Amino acid sequence: MVEIQCTQCKAFIARYKGSGELDLLLLEKVIKPIFLKELGSSEKTNLPLLICHECGNKLGNPTINAKGQFAYKMIKGSFRKKGVIKAMTPSPHTSWR
Ligand SMILES: [Zn+2]
Image (cartoon, rainbow, N blue to C red; front, side, top):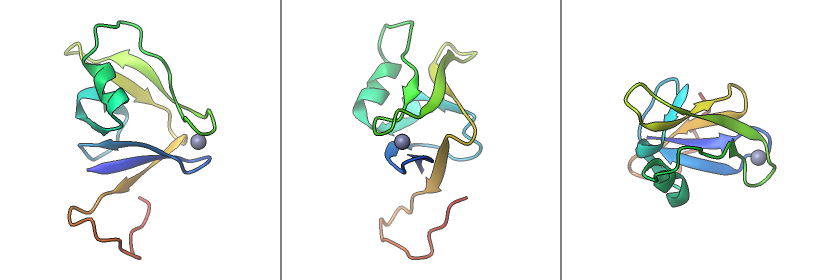
């Protein structure tokens, strides 16, 4: 599980069920926020751009993958991801990857 933060203002963007490169953010794998998760199951064909709700930084472009699932093509450098420790204990050694 990873958390995504805005590089510019460090705002929380999403919690995501997955790991690895995160080129593509699949909406059905989003845990939080709910509105983002729900976009994935909506009937809408035109998703809004993924932008930071705090500073307006552009984070991803809407797309649909080969299976027809809604996703965001993430813009490199606009976001950071952070591993989430299952036990939820805050660790001073948590580092950005
Ligand atoms: Zn931001």
